Length: 159
Image (cartoon, rainbow, N blue to C red; front, top):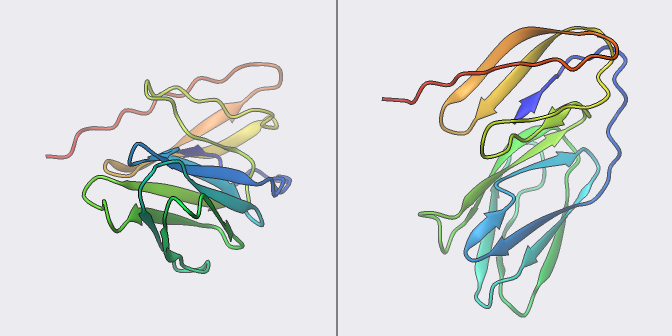
């Protein structure tokens, strides 16, 4: 997850609904950006029961079984925070993250690590990259009008 948390004059992101699926006993996507006020459509595309459990401080928690007979549940996220999500039935491998944000300048990197944050106004900012295992890094970045800005974060494996 990469974000520019302090863009002056940033507009609020549109509270557009997002989808979170359980397929092949894996959560899709692994990291989900959720705009404040949005509804998360929680799907179970598997022919088995999962148990969706969110570890939240500021939003309403969820700890609910989702059998194949309940293919869709919903949850509304109202407050910014990073939420760990797991399936209590398959918790040894089935976990993910929801990042609830009131900022539109966020991106989830690809498997290769590339990302893009569009429509950033010119200026100098702090940019933050977060990885669930490797932690968080912050650096300064200057965005110039009409130009792409390249940033390279290098995370070291934990020993």
